[in-house]
Image 1 (cartoon, rainbow over the protein chains, first blue to last red):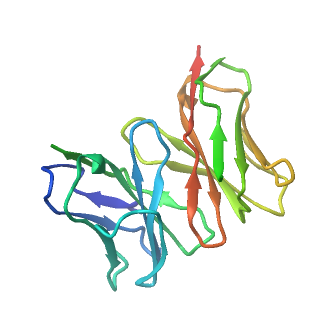
Image 2: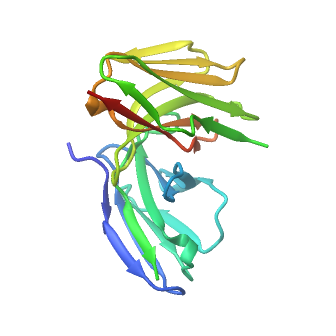
Amino acid sequence: DAGVTQSPTHLIKTRGQQVTLRCSPISGHKSVSWYQQVLGQGPQFIFQYYEKEERGRGNFPDRFSARQFPNYSSELNVNALLLGDSALYLCASSLKGNQPQHFGDGTRLSIL
Amino acid sequence: SQKIEQNSEALNIQEGKTATLTCNYTNYSPAYLQWYRQDPGRGPVFLLLIRENEKEKRKERLKVTFDTTLKQSLFHITASQPADSATYLCALGLYTDKLIFGTGTRLQVFP
């Protein structure tokens, strides 16, 4: 079975631009979460979606938004990019909450 | 303030020995705790989940303990191998389904 897939794998943007990252969960998983990981740190929670509804939001500005589609795939959007948004963005899926989360290999976003 | 602390220093051990990694937390009441392995350039890989009413969980060479009184989890790898070299992350699972990660401990197993 395919694991969590994320696209693109790498992305370079400039300050002020907007970016959309995509995630396809493991088949049958209805919960998708997004994390930001900067070098040397653990992943930091951004959003969780379950059955297309937002179930949790981390301490990130409103420039960050996400949605989940009827097929349970998800997009993360970041507007007005800042240098500090440079990070590895990870998507994780699970059957439901309180279950092991399975991560993709992330999108490496670099802001110039 | 709320904190999750893992061994900040890298852990270097000899092949065949038991590696013990520590995860301490303050001002959280987790419903469960998970351990993940992360290799450079890759996403975290799930290893074990232990719930608040469980004391110990095992899977092959891995063992995790969870002491909610001490607010501590210990993660053990027995008969360690060079292939076990990676960064290990602990993550607290809150009742809101949100995972809070520690900064990770880098384990290096030498032949």
